[in-house]
Image (cartoon, one colour):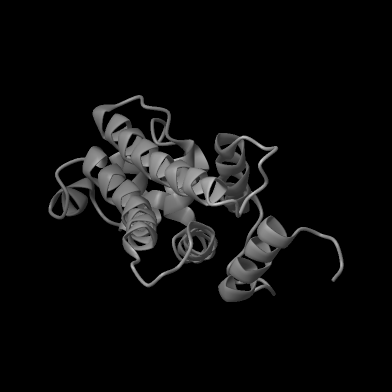
Length: 183
């Protein structure tokens, strides 16, 4: 039910999708849906939580590493893991990137997303202060560009296509940290 709800929210928009639409799409009654969830908002919250839980865990894991890894190494690992999470939860991440704060559920998701963004920006600033990133580019710009690149994957990446998530994660990370110049 959640998978179908996410698909409908992405296709039609959350506000334009009703429980009746979901019930019709699933071939069940509205009461059958309400047997499992209390509201459409509960479905939205579950979908957004799916996207945010993985991203939050990846960031917290990178921040908590105490194995001598530099901030740049932790940042690189975070970018790779973020791509893998996006690929594994593409519809839910797509929905997360489309919320605008029109309800308390969306506002909470945006708050949680800001926490993730702030943690990423902190990691970028740490890598810059260690001298592992370009000094002539503001760390906040680097952070936005890195994760803007990752987020843009929702617009074109097809997990069933020819590029598997690990290869995509490696490619995005290599291009972000090593550029396009041949070695």
